[in-house]
Length: 147
Image (cartoon, rainbow, N blue to C red; front, side):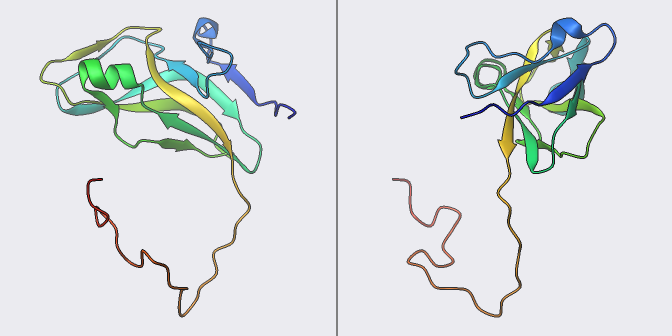
């Protein structure tokens, strides 16, 4: 499989924060904070990354939470996963929520989220008067039980 090359640039003074993977076979690149921020309890805050992407048409970047921050500090992403569209050229930001009871202190360089680049399937939505039946039907939101 050939690699798709995705261009990016970093804000001035942020080259050390460029996205990178901890391991070559990881699915996601770590995204880091470019500044010091205090996130109050039960509040969302935008954490800037210094990252600017040039995604080609037909691709998106998915911004996902880090499991260690969620488990150890009740830190999650408010709009998970966040989506960066191909036409967006602004700085990638991470909307971070502190679900804990104490302020969370973000330092410059802290890994705050993960980014997955995904190719989008070419689809078209077509209005229909009826849809095909399935065994599941309209059941959802826990309709299959806890198992």
